[in-house]
Structures are given as C-alpha cells and as structure tokens.
Amino acid sequence: MISIVGGWMVDANYWRSSTRSDYARFLVIGIVFLLILSILGAVGLFVDNLLGTVPLFLLLGIAAGFAGGLYYLYRAIDELGSR
Image (cartoon, rainbow, N blue to C red):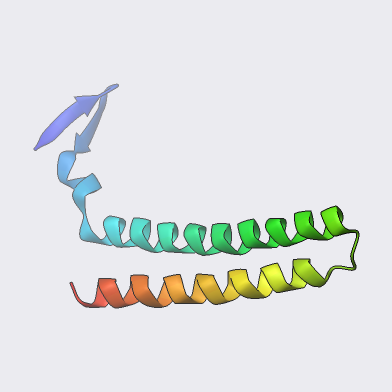
C-alpha cells in the first residue's frame, strides 16, 4: 500500500520491515542496559554522599548495575532467540 504524505510517496510496508523492528529491539535492549547501570550507579553515589564515604558504594552500585544489566541482556537475547 502506498500513500502520499506531504507530497512524498511512502510505502506503508517500509515501517513494518522485520529488519527495522530488529533494530528497534536491540536499541531498547541497549538503552535498558545503560539505564540499569546508571540508576544503580546513581544510587551508590547517593549513598556515598549520604554517609560521607569514599566511592565504595558507587563502585558497588556500578558493579551491581553491570551484573544486573548482563542478566537482563542474557534474558532478552535468549527471548529473541526463542522466537
């Protein structure tokens, strides 16, 4: 199906392409990985500032965020592989 948008002809199936949806899935996986890492790192930084400690909890938060992000990455890729 072809429609005209703003004078341009656009193929409606162009946006339904499996390649584009795969890119979107991988982009979301990467963004969630970074969010997990940064949120737990920020929590660690907050605890360090609250307790007045050296960046011990920041490093622990980053390590926990990395481990949590890898776990999420493993589960997400495993789910994509089972489709």
